[in-house]
Length: 361
Ligand code: ADP
Ligand code: MG
Image: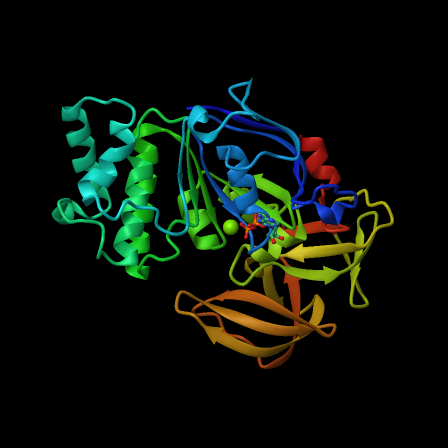
């Protein structure tokens, strides 16, 4: 297992990149902790696979270095890095049985037969294919083949890291949950450094200790699910994570005073903004209807079982608020207030810490 360090890492697929737009990955520097389960989350095309393939050694970065436990591995091939990687689509040997496929990575490394048999049995159980271990892979469904790929990634215990690139895409929905649970269990049992790529926030938030959120070639935040919920570092994290996502209001900010759609209110603390484009972000969970506050109008109420989602119009913008199942919601005109602790200030997309937070730090 290893701590993974990305040092001034950037990647362009072009031979002579010049502008920032030429980079599929913009420059980044961070440490990924040894033994942690990470999810790499972002929309399609934001650079997740590029980053994963650089960590595994399938792709050499055009700029910067990759280190495992402080050792530079940038020029090492995947095999030398001792990594197991599972891809979105199955990679299996059709002529081999399921058992032989699962045993392959172990045989390759000269593990004793008894131990191979034991581990193959265990992984076969984890992927729900115990009963089909002696079947040839040929003729199995794409779903079953992907489970074999997943199992092949899970069978080795001596790896520096386990990497998964959207491994459940072709898997039947009811089986997804089961396999994700198995991956989590594998992490609990063996404590491997794991990186799991997905564009699905539920998958990311349920699997990972820490979620790495990517947007347009950048890592915009690395945090626990709770940190991403309470203090999204970037407006993208705010609206990408959460259901519904964070409400973002154009706001002017002056010391402790803020103004949204012509109504001024007190923030209770100061924010050091620098003349950029400022916004206030408030999650629907932190918005309540009240007799006073920002004037708004209820346009729709959606009952989603555990709670209600109230859609409002505020200063020409749609706003979402979450209310309890039993709460009564007024028709039409009302006011909204922000619940203490739920206000985030952004400047040019990035979160601005309040004076209070800075004092506490
Ligand atoms: P994701 O996995 O998040 O969907 P990718 O890492 O696959 O994103 O892609 C990031 C960007 O790099 C995209 O704009 C994509 O078109 C581009 N890209 C990916 N692979 C290649 C490649 N082999 N050659 C050129 N451009 C690529
Ligand atoms: Mg991808």
